[in-house]
Structures are given as C-alpha cells and as structure tokens.
Length: 279
Length: 285
Image (cartoon, rainbow over all chains, first blue to last red; front, side):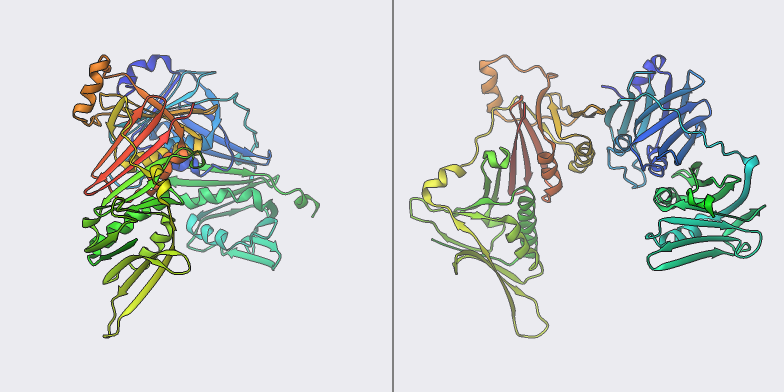
C-alpha cells in the first residue's frame, strides 16, 4: 500500500517532494488561475510558481512559498514541468474537498524529473489516493518585462470594493478602461456597452483605498474577456494591487489568505488593447 | 386484479418516498411486482439499459397500514406493472405531509396507480389530492422476465466504504474518465482506478471487512482451492452507471456490500431494515 508515510523512504528518487496537511491550501489558490488547461509549474528552493497563459496577452501566476508546505525538498535549482491544471484540480479534490473543520486531505506531491509523471499521494480518513498526472514539455512562460522601476501608477485596494465594482460591470462592453490620474477622477473603471457607458470612480481618500500612487495620468483599455478570469482570484483575495507601467501593461496582484491564515500571491499581467495606442 | 394500500404513518410514507426516489434515479421505467407480502421494483438487464439490472424488495407490512391485493388468479396471486418511478415519486413528494395516503390500482382512461392523499387542514373540511400515475399491466406470459436474479457466483464480497466518500471519489473520477475499474479482495481491500492518456488515479480503501455468506462460499471452496486472500477480483464498468447508483441512493443503508465476479459483473447490495436493493453493473471488456 502506498501510504503517505511509507513513501518517504523513496524520497531519494524524487527531485521534488512537497507535502501539505491540507490540500485545499494548494487547490484553492490554483482555482484562482484555472482559466486554461495548461499550467507551467516552476519550482525553485523559494517555492512553487504556477503559470497559466492565454493568447500571449494574459498571464496568471500563483506563488506558493516553500514555507507554506510542511515539507519542501528540491534537489535542483529549478524544476519545470507542464501539466493539465483541470486534471490536477480534480485530483486534489478527489475526496470532495470538504470545508468541514477537522477533515482535511493530506497531500504529498512528488516528481522524479523530466519525462516522469507528477505523482500525488492524497489521504483522508485512512483512504489513500494515488494520482499520476502525465507531464508535458514545459513551455517558456512569457516575460512581460514588468519591473517596478517602470511602474507609473499604483493603487492598492481592499478586494471587497473591487469585487463590488466587477460584479456591476457591464459585461456587454468589449473592453474595460482603467484611468489613473493625478486629479479627479483619480481611479476610474469605465465600460462602453450596449446600454451606454458606465464609470466607476474611487476617490483617492476612500477607506477602501490603501495606497494611491500616481505619477502620470494614464488611460488604457483591456479586453474584458481577458480580465474576466481574474475575478476568480479577486473572489479569494483580501487585497489587490493594481499597477500599470509606461507601456500600459496592467499588473493585478492579489493577496490571498489560505485556510491557515498564511499569505500567498496571485498575479495577473494583461496587455493593453491595441486601440488604446491610436487614441 | 385488485390492489389498494393505505399509509398512515409519516415515517413510513417518507421511507417509501425515499425508496421510490432512489429507484427513479436508477431507471426511467421498471416493473413493479405486487405480491401479498412484498413489493418489488425490478429492472432486468436488457441491452437497451446497458445491461444494468436492479432488484428492490420491500415488505409491505413495514410500509402499509392496510394492504389488500388480489392477483390475476389464485395460482398467480400477483400483479405485475410497468411503471415510471419518477412519476410515482413526484406524486408522493407533493403529499409528504399527508394525514394518510391511499395507493390503489384503478382503471381510468388507462390503468393507473392512483395516489390519493388526505392533507391536513385547519378547518373541518378535508382536502384530498389525487394523482393518477399511468401504468402498464404486464401480461402473465412476460412475468418470467422479472424473477429475482440469482446471487452471482462471485469471486470476492466486500463491504463498501462510506458511500459519501465513495461518491466524492467517483464524481471526480467521472470528470477524468468514462470507465472505472473496481477491484477488491478477501482481505477487506478495495480500489477504484481510472487510467487515461492524461492521468491515472487509484483510490485505496482498506479494512472494509468481508461479509460471510455462510454455506455458499464453503460449497465453492469444495470444488476449487480456497481463494488467495490478497488476490484482487476486478470489474471494469461504465463510470456513469456506478455514479448514478451513488448519487441516487437515499436509503442510508445500514449495510452496503459489493460483490465482484471477476471481469463479469459488479453486484452492489444496499440493506436497510426491511428494504434491500440490488444493483448489477456488467463489466466491460
């Protein structure tokens, strides 16, 4: 029987071993970026980064620091692999992913290296499940070259307030326009849909706004279809940082607290809509 | 041919409703056999139903306070109907708070099971709700199709793990694959396995216990050498058929048993007081 404990003796053959007492701590954060099947896993001694991309215009990353795991052993500086995220999420919630306190699924994640499957050992209430997920050739994630020195504008909001705005956004609009300015309206979300235009303004001294840092007035449009997946992360997060750089690339960084109160980050990068350049 | 039964006790009514609900989740139509002592819901394993067979047995005395029936003849004192369990369930569901429910076989435009419920009122005037559920009478010559299935000559018999856990696992596996391999041995172990191009998932249950079937197994043992306790018997089945069984069951069985005839059939039994439900899922190659 491949019990969790017994498998520890086989650790030598694995380049990556990570254990979690509560598999939800991993599955929840992965749900925040689950908008495409293919996910690129990049493990370093600092932890695990999972990347999902769409149309070369959108990238979502989930970071799970090594400290979140009860055990995180990596034998190489960098281990990369690509797997089907939908399959992984089904595997992680094989026991139903119940939220009942006192019942949690223990997880042990092992990887032998290139060409091998990603093996998950899951245990709940004495029942053990072994999943072997076939890995694919890892693709190189896009580098958006988004660095803090190029950031022109930055706003930190409580997620609550953005959730409200996103739930009321006119989804018939093809784009979401984000305006950040030195004067009124400071931070504005605009849509241009069938029923007309709508603007959602945040005063910069709002309780919901933790930080407002604006160097130049900037107005950029982003495809609504690309931003929609980010609402998954928004729903889980407590704070969100909205940044744009000089090229108009949008960075949304979500702070997510897991069941144990530990902090993880999910970030989304999105390219501006072409039209924005014409204006 | 006459049938009339009356349920007064709310607990009995709920119990009967749950059983019919369970049946309705498993099959669109089935045969309902009424005998002086029992009710049977029967689905015979025809190709059209994917070879799945079902046998559900209830003692009438545990449900009905009054029960009168007269079969087609004194030799064949039995009534055999083709029913749509979903329709009976709908009728029963709407009368769940009734003071009493009468179920009888009537001849309206077509043969019907008439469910007449007396609902509670604040005034002295009674409210009676009547549902006519159309049924077909199955002629005597076809009765042989609805006999109790014989207990298969299984290789392994094992108690099922908690059905809720099993349902969760099967639900997820269904997202990943269309087929599921069920394996079990005589050491109380059972595994559920799926394998696709993308992933292989195996769930191991242990310490489940193996039911004793009395003389039956020893008779087998006489002709062959006793089975190796750790040897797995397996059946590869359509995962939807197993999921249907797990999703639909509402009887909260006190005993749930799984019998496997190696590569032939998966035989599931739920026992709850007077009710027994057997479900046969044929193995696929």
